[in-house]
Amino acid sequence: MNLITITTFLPLAGAVILLLLSALASREADQEGIDNRYRWIALIVTIATFIVSLGILSGFDRSITGPQLAQKVPWIGSLGANYYVGVDGISVWLVLLTTFLMPISVLASWGVTKRVREYMLFMLLLETGMIGVFVSWDLLLFYLFFEITLIPMYFLIGVWGGERRVYAAIKFFIYTVVGSLLMLVAIIAVYFYNAKAAGAYSFDIVEITSRLTSNPGLIPQNVKLWLWLAFALAFFIKVPLFPFHTWLPDAHVEAPTAGSIILAGVLLKMGTYGLMRFNLPFFPDISQKAAPYVMALAVVGIIYGALVAMVQPDMKKLVAYSSVSHLGFVVLGIFAFTEQAMQGALYQMLAHGISTGALFLCVGIIYERRHTRLIAEYGGIATPMPQYSTMFVIVALSSLGLPLLNGFIGEFLILLGAFVSPVPHAKLFAVLGATGVILSAVYLLWMLQRVIFGEVKKRENAELEDIDAREKWALVPLIAMAIVMGVAPMLFLRASEKSVNDVRQKVAGADEKSVGSVR
Image 1 (cartoon, rainbow, N blue to C red):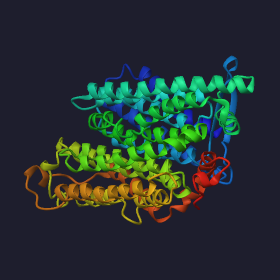
Image 2 (image 1 turned 90 degrees about the vertical axis):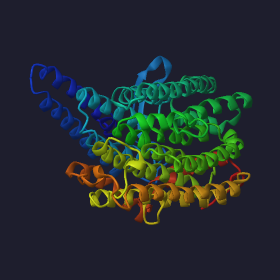
Image 3 (image 1 turned 180 degrees about the vertical axis):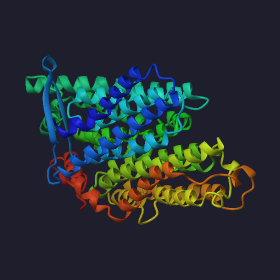
Image 4 (image 1 turned 90 degrees about the horizontal axis):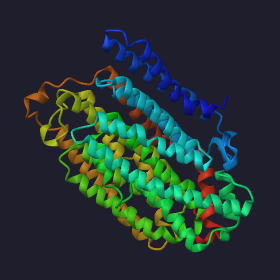
């Protein structure tokens, strides 16, 4: 069987095992023992999925731009839909990021005691959906996986979230579904325009991209604008780009710790991935015209997210708004259309997944002990929790972009590439975007000062226990990856170079000077 198919559906097989086990264990009295089995099965399955996904990386050829390790099987013949999966330089790292974060998320969920079977079931279903999004090369298949991820995350927030969990879950669902329906309309339109030119129906992303590239007039210009907007709004909401971000803080704050890790680490990247996979290659001329406006929104998001994060009394909400700021950098890089900026955007996707996932994990660890996320309730916890505090500081420094840690590389490449981009006003956008780096240092260091350092002013903090072995197993891999990505970025950048440049050249079209060739 194809390695990518195994990686995609192994978590689904784990979910089936959970259901079978629950049917066999329904008569047993030891509920805690049964729940532990569910936890261990979910952990083993997610670790196995990560190990299998490493095989994808080992078989990946960085000199090829199109889908690799692909499997294409007829699915719905009358519609021209196929089960078509594969990876390229853009998606391979996002698949690895997903499989890397899932075992950590399961470890972070060990303290969940309510409906453990259902919780772990939704976690495994969510993993299959997320991997499916990144490996799909059929538009219909992509859309189905994109929608499938909504259901588990809706329940994870709505059932296992905080006090306002139902409100946050419904808001998350409505925002995303509205964007998804717009994208569905655009997919159907592109499908019919492609069929009109090809004489046959097909959802094949490679075929559609090639036809739209070779025949720019295939879709009328006024229609093309609306289709670009439909795709873009779906992905802007998912990112989320300012001003479509309002669902994110509520979802993050109310979600369980693992939900926040996955939401920030992977689900938001589905939006930026979609922009690179569809908006730019399908509609390069519209993307060029829209670039100044999108970059302006990205810069507003960078500054706005950072400023709002600075005044948050809640640690989790601070980290949530930092995501709005950091994902603004990614969108800025994508629409700069230079090699450095687009490579930096992809790198920042990975770095943000690691750093922000680790930040949410750190907040979750301390919340399990004190049952509060208010910054004012802490102070001086470096004294009772030195190991935790050390890791928290490293994670925060990686998020704010300290050199030799993962956050620096992506932001540096984005700002460098944006500054030399020929997009109108790009230099101004780069300069304004750079203020986000300064502001991120302000809110993260100020949070560290108030939470980690100083004197222990509350008795409850003096009695806190340092992190245990399970929490170390969850945090240490994230910190190790942050250091590896900061010290050896070319390990990641080389694999994505060909595919990113392929997208960039499609935007550039025949006249490379229209967007600049920056190498």
